[in-house]
Amino acid sequence: MAKRLIIANWKMNPATLKEARALFQATKKKASTVARASVVIAPPSVYLAFCKPSKKVLLGAQNVAWADKGAFTGEISAVQLANLNVTYVIVGHSERRFLGETDEIISKKIKSVLKQSLIPVLCIGELERDNHGAYLRMVEDQIRKSLAGIGRESLAKVVIAYEPVWAIGKSSDEAVNSHKLHEMTIFIRKILSGMCGRDLAHKVQIIYGGSVEAKNALELIQNGNVSGFLVGHASLDIKGFGEIVKAVDARG
Ligand code: 13P
Image (cartoon, rainbow, N blue to C red; front, top):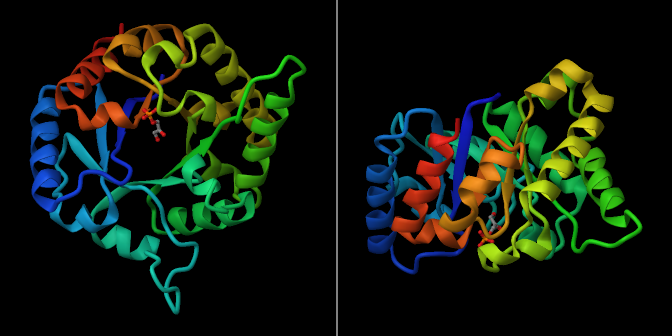
């Protein structure tokens, strides 16, 4: 089993640098006792330069440009992120897909991230579940298209974050259950096996995001067949996030 990973996606929070610094420091403190997991904080990009990563807490970005440099107003390149000591880059989050990001753009972004030796965290997930398996086709399509043109060896370096859109921003009661999650991880790994072979596919880390809270973290990590979480709203609550980190670290 790959090393466990908990990524805090702060999204467009908090409102001030002062709050961001305080939350970063408090999270660092919570993560200081973690033995078997990596904790990553992905703050809004304006705060990246003010958040100093450590051995226990790494830095993540929420988005990246597909180009290395040039006339791209408002964009931030993987080269610039690497210079700010970022290690992980979230790519293709559903909230960015809603803003028009396509699988083609996502694939270019992943290549740009890999070129800087950063770790892409590819977000995939269906909008809703149906009884005919259309949701599986959607997930498969996202994986194949978002990873198109990426070499077999590089594929193994990508972290896949399964984030069903219907489960995002709710409460733990409405998150995916561990049984459905386990099934989905098998499906994802089967697709990856077809793309890069069984051995490399087994190296790919699969994590889950979508209303992970202190209440459901232990059950999902124990029985969901994932090696970690991408946490949204609960990462802004230091106590709750601390409990999620503890649950992931404690799993047998
Ligand atoms: P929530 O944990 O708020 O559901 O957000 C999940 C997510 O989108 C993380 O990237």
